[in-house]
Amino acid sequence: MVRNFTMTIGGSAATARSSFVVEDPATGEVLAEAPECSREQLDEAMRTAADAFTSWSHDARQRRRGLESLAAVVEANIEELADLITSEQGKPIAEARGELRGVLNNLRYFATLELPEELLRDDQRVTVKVLRRPVGPVAAITPWNFPLGTAVAKIAPALAAGCTIVLKPSPFTPLTCLRFGELTRDVLPGGVVNVLSGGNELGAAMVEHPVPRMVSFTGSVATGKRIAAAAAPDLKRLTLELGGNDPAIVLDDADVETVADGIFANAFSNCGQVCVAIKRVYAPERIYDEVVSALAERARAAKVGDGHLDGTEIGPLCNRMQFERVSGLVADALSGGGAAVTGGAAVDGPGYFYEPTVITGVSDGTRIVDEEQFGPALPVLSYRDVDEALARANATHFGLGASIWTSDPDRAAAVAPEVEAGTVWVNSHQSEVPGQPFGGLKWSGIGVEGGRWGLIGFSEIQTVYVARD
Image (tube, rainbow, N blue to C red; front, side, top):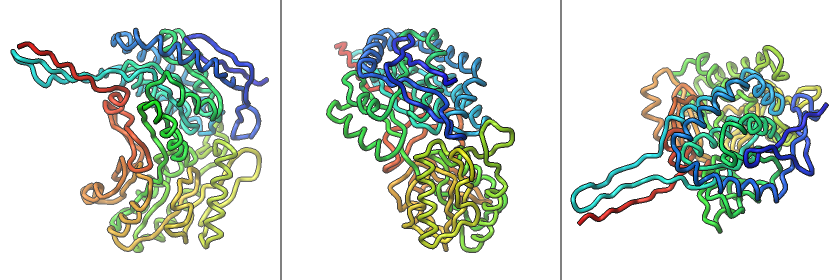
């Protein structure tokens, strides 16, 4: 029996006249149906978000309680939500639980923050304060690789800042967010969080709608550019977290077995479907063959399968579109002279499974090196010296993340500022501590998420000047 889900508008359940199917990427079969939001329902969601904004933005104590209550609801339903994430997105259940731990951390962290206030001058003549005011209702559009994690990375700081939000998850993975809306309707005042579902047309209508004062989007560069253009006539504020092509630079003093563990984990987790995953590796000529061999060994040993099954390390790609993209990029690399040291083909059987693939014999200018593959295929390239590696790593429109791998962290830390990326890790990748900002340079985004910087991103400056003389 196909399960049906409802949208959340103004704190109430909302069905729709039509629906669309959501597939299980492990089988390719229909998993559930999701409602197709109408224009009238979008208008209603925006109206309720605008109505709720006035009281929500003026009550910091209510905002803290609301975020804490959201965390409690997620924690009480963590197994159901993890199962939904794995069912609609494909990642192993352990990774789904990890995504939800991140959700809890975000909700609880932002419950402790308030918008800053700065006193510039206070004397007998004048008092000048610089305040931060919530920007207003927010339209949030999220991708399919971390269905609830990315959504809450927007919801938590937006609510903490005093904004209300209308959320549209990806049509490939709407179910977890819809269920989140269902579970949390009684936790927040109606209209503070609205959850809709639909296709690209709904996202475009949200961006162009007159109510939201800000658009927060995570997704591809191409879509981000379209959103920026569509938001411009209304001068909507933007946070765009876009694509990445993260390089990992292995220095010549690295212990190969140690760094191979870290690089493989951060290239192939979530089947490589992470904006800030390692997408290309630069290894020095002296140890290049050892690095390739170590990565290939780990790829061959990784267990690929349904994310619900014990021991699965790599699940399927999330959807046919992404499966065909990865297949095409690998085929292009191989036809151009590249070699798949391991992998290089789809897994026989149902679902969107692809073999973990390590590719050699390709150079800068090959599509799988220059583009964001967003899948379980990793090119490894050689270099002669560090200056060359830095130049090649930086020769891209992307600038999201990067990492340097070495036995001498101080040496790598000295090199890190030369890398053109929003975050540069040493002997790590994707790691974070509470309060850490996350954003990209160049085409990888506008604005920052995470930490107090992410909170400030949902606000605007107001200066209050009081003349006393």
